Image (tube, rainbow, N blue to C red; front, side):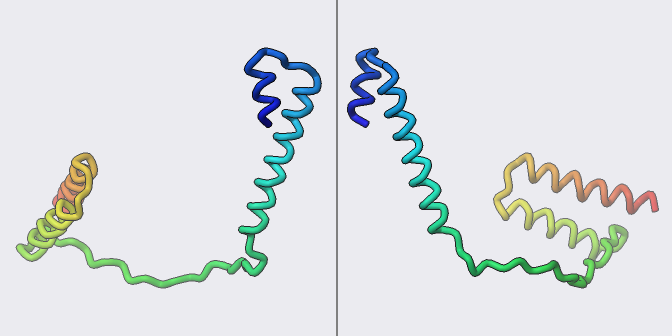
Amino acid sequence: MEEVVKNMASDQVDEKTVQQQEHILSRLLDAQRSVNQREYNDKREAQSGKNIARQSPSDLNFSSPNGKNKVRDELNKAVQEGYSKDYEELIRKYYDALQKENIKN
């Protein structure tokens, strides 16, 4: 490798230097494949997906004081989580849109 570096630094690149460089590259790629194969675990198995039934959260009732408090609490919780200002604004817009949609219905 040092010989190839010296030849390239002194602009003495010939066919032999190119072949040496290709050989070095080949060896490096073989070493990388060897490392990847060692990290591969033969015991891995695929598992099919499972259907999980989850209960949806209850609807937000913006007309009741309890519903308004829940929205306020959720917004405060989002602010305390440490999200970026842009994400906080997105959350705020989401709850505003929910409230507007609830007023229409």
